[in-house]
Length: 97
Image: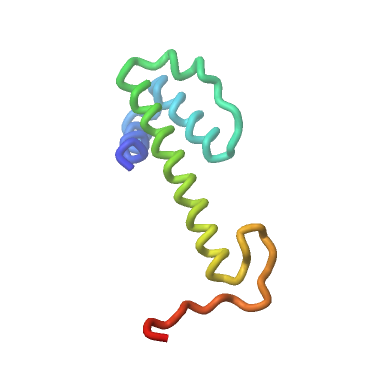
């Protein structure tokens, strides 16, 4: 989560910079799952561009992590992954039984 923290720090420390505007747009687009103009990334200096790419990597990892948590929650709450409700939630097997 280094890139997420670095971008957050950059937004707080340098909110008026062009890179901050691009980072804000990127984060908003990712959070709202809407389109983002890649041309905006190409206007960044190399360090900022690399940070934006790392942010994308971390965001993707977090997104899949959230999906796994949702699946686990569904499994433990008695909801099958396909969304159908089971008649009774499964209880974990006790060791030795």
